[in-house]
Image (tube, rainbow, N blue to C red; front, side):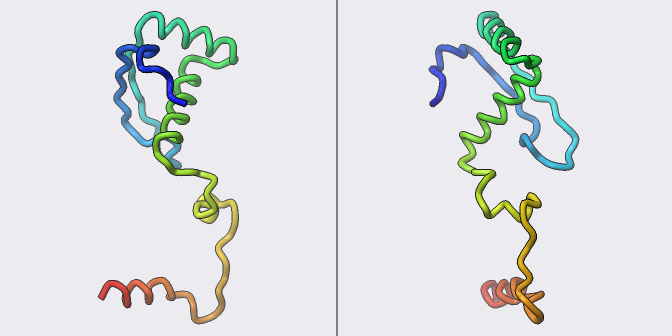
Length: 106
């Protein structure tokens, strides 16, 4: 469920890198909030035991997750994320994907 636009006023943001990128240096995302928005953010973060920075990072990750349509729990990502090992299809199949590509894209 998306928050009502009037609750966040003139929220502007410059996002400099995709969130959750592995092996990349972190980038800074800067934003401006109305005073009431900032107060609500600060109080909510404090209740949760978070810094404002941590709360904003969580909010950005949640937004990206909801808006991207990509489910990081999709099994297609298991091998790349190290949740399981690639299957060994046996001798002679080492170049199968390259061979398929060569056939398809001639």
